[in-house]
Image (tube, rainbow, N blue to C red):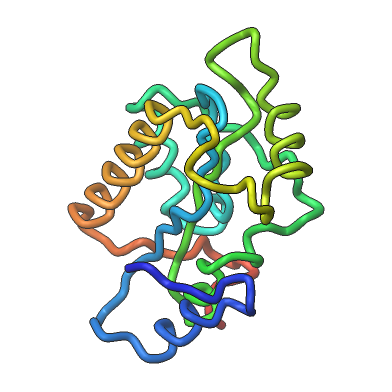
Length: 170
């Protein structure tokens, strides 16, 4: 599913989470804004600590050669600032895999590259298809998410909130 209006208040995802066209929805896997700025070596699982999806995502990522890293921007509470949060509010376990700051190329500082891209290009006219992309990282990311979706679909139990989790439905 593709939604719109994220930066206008999660409008598309909120509408769908409140008025789903399919039932039941057992999980939300957000693939928004995977930056392919360099050969990505690690992923960050936003929300992975809240549900059983986190362990599944770690396995899927490792199968595609990604390391898992902790969120370097915890203070930004990114888990509640993107479309997956509409599903969380509806009680649906969710995760959002983001690129980390590690590059597979030791000559590239992933953190510096990302910071500079956010400063100069993000939400500007230069944020277009003419910029360089590492499509191999994008392919590995897509395969990671496909592995995760398959793991969820083939599991004997639905994804679940961890006992006592803040976001778990009361």
